[in-house]
Each structure stands twice: as C-alpha cells, then as structure tokens.
Image (tube, rainbow, N blue to C red):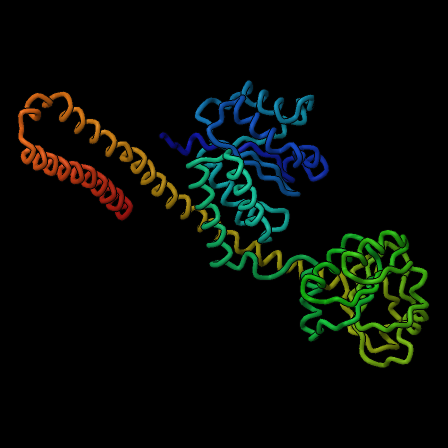
Length: 411
C-alpha cells in the first residue's frame, strides 16, 4: 500500500470565494448524498473521499494520485452538479499536499471561519469524517490526516485564547443574564420570533429555562417557537393585555418604533414592583427609552453587546499568530508520523515474504534432503527454522522504528 501526502487534494467552495447566497446552491441533498459520493469515487477512481458541508463552506477531501487538470475538474463537477454553468464551478479552489493539510488544520481550528474561534466547526469536521468512513469512502491517509486535524484543533483551543471570549450577541446576552443570578424558574416574555430571538430562546431552553410566553405579529410563527420551547404563543397585539407577570423580556422585532411603550410596560408590571430585566436585541431598540427613567430596569442593549463582541473578536484575532505556530508545528509532526506509517506499511510485507522463503526452502529447494531425515531431526529442524523466522521478522521492524526515532530527534 502506498500513501503520499501529494495525493491529498481538497476541492472547495467557501464564503470567502462565493458569498453565502451563491454557496447554498452547491450543498448536496442529504437523501442522495451517499449515492452521489460513491458514484464520484468510482467514476474518477478516487482512492479516498470525504465531504464536508457547513453554512460557510463545502469541501471535498480526496486522495487521488492522478492529475487534477481541467479535464478532471470538468468530470468532477459534471458528476456532482450536472448542468451547472461553468462560471459557477470556476469559483472552486483546488489545494493539494501540504497546502491542503494547512488549510484543513486552519478550518478545524476555526481560523478560516466566518466568526473566528467558534468551536462548532471541529464537531462538524469529525461528524463528516465519521459519516464518510461509515460509507467506506475513506482509507488510511484520510484516517491519519483527520486524526491529526482533531489533535491540532484541540491544541489550538487549549493553548490559545482564540475561543475564550464569546463574540455572538446571543451568547453575550445569555452570559449577562447568568451574571444577574437568573434562575431556571424565571418567567420570560419573548417579543418577536425572528432569528435572533429564536436563537436566544433555544439557548435558554438548552440551559434549563422553561417558562416562556412568545409574542409575534404572525401568530403562526409565534406558535412554532412556543411549541419548540414548551411555552405559549400570543399575537403581538395581546402584549398590552398580558397579566401573568414576567421577570425578563427578550425583544427583537423589525419595528421602526418602540414596541414596548410606557403604557404597555406598566400594564405588564401590574402591581409588581420588583426589578426586571430587558434584553433588547432590536435595531432600532424595541423598549421606549422613557421606561428606564420611570422603572427599575436592568437594560441589556444590542449596541453594548455588539461593542463587546467587536472587542472580543479583536482579542481573538490577536491570537492568530500563536494559532498558526501550533498548526505549523503539527504539520511538521504529521510529516514524521506519515514517514513512520510508510515504513510500517513497507515492513508489513516482511512476515509474508519470510514465510514464502521458508515454505520454498522446506517444500522445494531442500525437500529431498528433508525427506531423508528421521522424525526427531525434522522436529528439531522445524524449531530452528521457526526461531530464525521470528527473529528475522522482529529485527527489521525494530531497526526501522529506531531509525525513525533517531531521525525525529535529529530534526
């Protein structure tokens, strides 16, 4: 078996080369994914194949010893995206060898993500590999590469500050709520059922919160979110009549005017005089500024959260140098590991070859002489040959490992 890093290729589309809207058309349908990948591997005679798909990228990791020229690329995309215009697929990027390895390490370490330092990508990479392995699409080289990829990403996350401070508004808002000692019995009013509020509400549910009332202009949309949360849905027009009390308001609508007016807020409070929390993720803000002057409100505004997120992102980016150094070091280590694996594969045929030589000697070359020996002599001869066989198998393997260790220490 032959493994060479130069045979490792990545063909990719990403948010950097296409933008998110154009990228969407290159995602493969999950229902036919296995079949398409198997056809691709077979028709192009790829030795190994892995498919990675996230909201920010689509990548095909291949092991292919042949030329990846224009004809190869044309066949590649014609199998996966028949009828796709040439100008679309021309946005694909082709990487090979060490360049491809560096790219993959950077991707898994979240250096190439839309939001630097987000840990989700390492899980996505592992799941993509496990799926393709379960379909028998991968082999020895991708196994080694993905093992080192995961090790590298873990080292980056462990030994740098790249992922320490949150940079999403939702995670920052949640952290602020926890700092206020909010417990799981807290009553939440969710005003608006768009992307931000949905993400925030599901984040709260994940961490044990369960008391939700969801308000939205479109009741059906509020009902979907409320169903996911185990809460109750209301039309936005019912907000002024809600009398069940609350502890925290999470609001994010597309209104150009404050949705939570002083009159509505006073109605929501009723006779309750306890301090409340309002997380306002809307731009412009949903909470009328006059409310904060006349009521005891802990106000968490999206503008403040975005500034913190910006500062945290700058701090993450300041860690890029340390992250890249870890990646370079791990590439060097991988090269040594790959050399050792090559030796293992080369030496794996030694036992079989020695057995062949032994059988030839016993059954062909010296068959006549051995046939003239008595039973005891044959038994002793067999023991001597078996002893030599074991020694000749173990010795070159041990010597090869010692040579690899010496070379590693010298480097």
